[in-house]
Length: 104
Image (cartoon, rainbow, N blue to C red; front, side, top):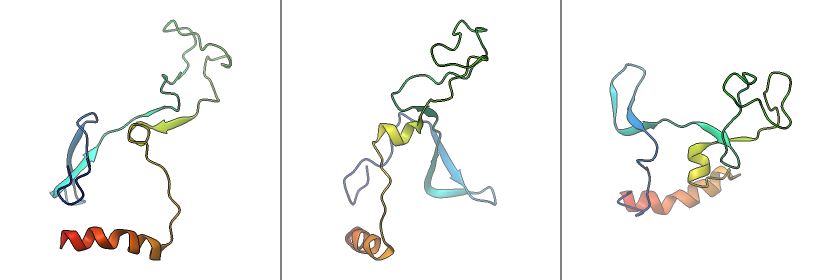
């Protein structure tokens, strides 16, 4: 929980480890999160392999069993419903100013 905003900043749902700098030393108070790609609907991604694992590729698969049309998204992005935001530098500064004031 972020002590300033009161919002959840991390989750134990995704494994994490201490972030390290280019010199290999840990970076204080920073974590690196491990994520994965998933389909937009939350289903498994069919990587093919024909019927080697009993999957067969299903409808819309090519000869090797791979589906080309699977739309993927990052699991952290999907879980926390993150969205891209087009913002001008001046607007970003105005948005972040109250937060930084409270940190000081």
